[in-house]
Image 1 (cartoon, rainbow, N blue to C red):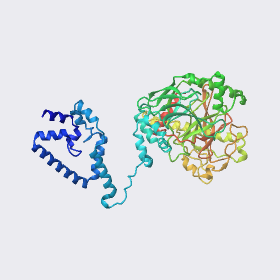
Image 2 (image 1 turned 30 degrees about the horizontal axis):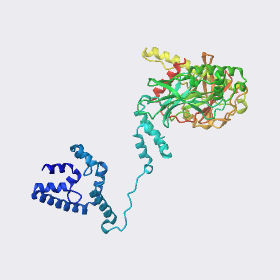
Image 3 (image 1 turned 45 degrees about the vertical axis):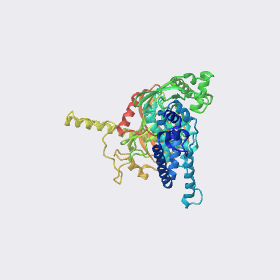
Length: 586
């Protein structure tokens, strides 16, 4: 028994337990004889029963048995030498003996071969081998499914995935993937998407933070070169945030001419954040400040200083360069919203580019507030800084322009505007007087009406009983737009002699004109005052303003760009935003 037990311990476990390979080895036979005939008969009957059961299963489930054998060998389980449970029971000697055997089992090879034959002949129903199952490639999946798959991958894998093929790179530019990535990976910076105004003293600016490919990029929008107001906006990157990191996001400063370098972003509060450059030497140029000024002048104005003959304009340009260069390492941004739109608005509100004499082109936001329209500066100058209301239009007082010959006469235009201004003053005084009487009768609890919204006087009547053209009767701007004969749609327009304009290529027809006021001030926003003027609506995307006191004309053209994450949550939030940016420069 000891000899048999010793032989048994050295027999490979797979051969002993599974009983494969035909007749037992000598050690196994000796063990059976040592135990007696009864044990040998039991083993034989068990083998015969197992063989019959195996034959029955082969007839019914050949492919399953073949697949099970392959899976057992590949996965390291079952009758092969990789069975973890038997390996745990063996000693070092048994493990070494099992490892010395070949990986393939003759019985498994026989089962696989039989399964292949049966699959090929199909039980006599198929003469040739069956074609392999079709393989599904990721490229064949619909883009919607690929977006969901890519969105669930770690951010560190997306750059490599974008290099596989053009289709993957195009799908990875889908905003859905990066919006989810911003929420999951860059939760710290999820609030900075949208429009912002940098705090650069009186000059301001327009920053648009968007998801662009594998980065969140802050693009600074710049007006076109003066005086080409109809040209598209220019933009340059100020910073970018990598979207591929899993935990910490890398912030890079894009300012300067030496490529991206290390930067930092700090979220001050929900509607305010700041950027800081940690390597300001990347902003400097080898030629010193003179080379930096020449480069900045070409980028900002598209010309050299020698091309600018106006001495006052040269001083303004040099002053802006010195002032803005102080903010190249640290900037604070405050959120701004696009104005809400209503069906009765005169035109669609939004951002416009306007000419401002020697100051060049500036960005203005046109918004509607009841029967008034306001133009708020997003970019400014030392006279009227960013955030101030540059123009205000009274939509209740339209101005009927004279014929083309009289339009050239500045005195005639000035007479029409001053008459309307006098009427507006009378309305404000009478409205304030009646408001005071109402307070004395009703008690101190009643609040007086705002001087900005005077009571409408009884309209003056024409010969046919219709309201006069310059009457104080309130009427909607949309209703005025529906009356082309009275509003002057398609009416010829020409600037009066003596009124200067940076752009002589202004439209020669207009739809309608309204009375308005423009804000003027001295250098440093000293002695600000509102002076009368004329608001001229040319079309849906262009309007102008004549400054009577300055004898100057400003032409405005719509910014043709789509901005996301820039809509105001409510009209009240937009009004509050206007007050905030105005208070910073008041």
